[in-house]
Image (cartoon, rainbow, N blue to C red):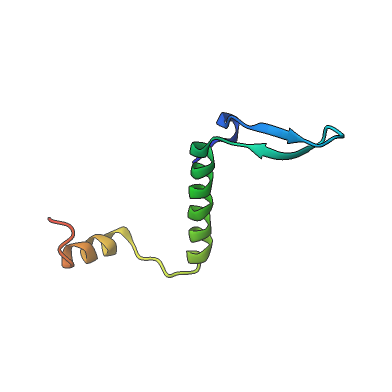
Amino acid sequence: MVKLKELNVQYITNESGERSGVILSIEDFEALLEDLEDMALVVERQHEPTISHAELKAELKRDGLLSD
């Protein structure tokens, strides 16, 4: 997750000196977008049923995705 204090943000100001926009590196921008997408998925899936760790392991073994 991106830490805001670690971003190299440059501000764009209007004639009154008020901040009206920001400039970010492409790397920082893409990292922020990825974090937003991850958070949106969490919100979308928050009401889905859950299973225990043991159930997940059993399912993965049954599907051949995890060995003993």
